[in-house]
Length: 323
Image (tube, rainbow, N blue to C red):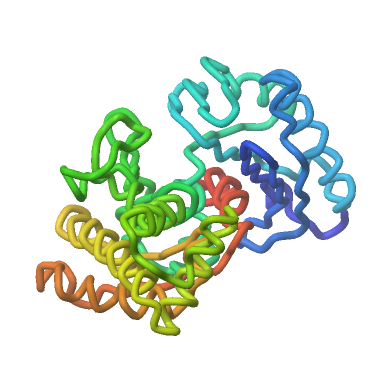
């Protein structure tokens, strides 16, 4: 390609339990081309990694970007990692243990590779090219099947001593609450996630409450979209469920405000599709609970990059650290 500066392109890979999303990203954060392919976790680590390599190389070829012009590959992974060592310690959804993924990918690609937690790279993506553009201190909270998070402090991802920083879903909110998958009771994830909200409805119905949500609950189709919609129509159980979830989330945000003092909270994940039906009560609950100085000037906004946040942020692991 004539007139193209060398190393102005980077690849980001967002590896999920069901699908992998791969994007070719310019050094300014713009997506050149992206694809989504099935993960096929039954092929095991070696098989999945081979497919990651093949799909990535095919993507560059389809975009007509010579591999020599790619400065590196970043990978977002859903689990516990040894980030400095480039090793997957344990990926729950894929069943991987002790996989030296960075070395394997660097050997295959011949370019630098960096790995990080999937929620961390989503946060980096939003700060680089999304809702947090230009901000230096941001907390991303993803509300989906669980609750994930990523923290940007001073413009850099916060990892902590063992890479656990940002596990917002496991902030203890209700010591008398139900048992979380992590083994502790009352984590934020048990209340504010999509799974948690459906559980709250189920428990109330089993206790005898009536609601328009009973039928979809019995059919196994109940979603947070329906819960928020019925809450806006005035359904008592739906309103109570939204209030409990939002209150728990606001409590966690108030704690984070006095710990890391962000200027912006970004809310993403499937539950965030409720839009203002989520943001308005969340804003109210947050203002009531946050310490006044810690909450001064703090904004709460919805994520903007959607499914692209992960691979954009993964590419940013290398593109944003260039000298």
